[in-house]
Length: 179
Image (cartoon, rainbow, N blue to C red; front, side, top):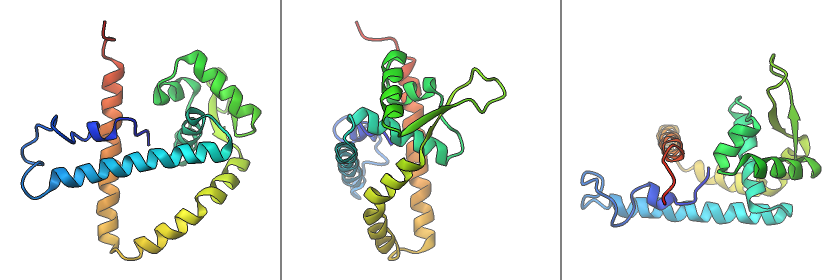
């Protein structure tokens, strides 16, 4: 998940106008904690990039490509460009770097052979397992403390949050640039 202005996207702080969610029950404080965790996740992405000896943007792109594959909807270079907010030329250079490092491949599996999709290599899966494996084990241990119902509810929240953020990013891309 791209988390640049995560807190602001949640309406944390003085810009929040939703009286219902900013009541005295501490909802605004909880959202602030979520925003702080989002910033920590962003920092974790930077560490992952450094561990791979990649530019941060390259690592974000790699994670986006991998996540799209997991959803069964591989990205084209154009869709990757939109997701990481780079020009087509900068995205092409980024994909070239990832290909040279044997992290991604471009394929033409669509019936229209002009359509290119991006896929991570097996090597990336091995690297991700090595890097994220210890975290996954800790998460499994932590999640064992919660009922399946609570975990489903949390998963639903995270999916809804991501969908809202993606809609906002799409809306934002249609806005005219400030002068």
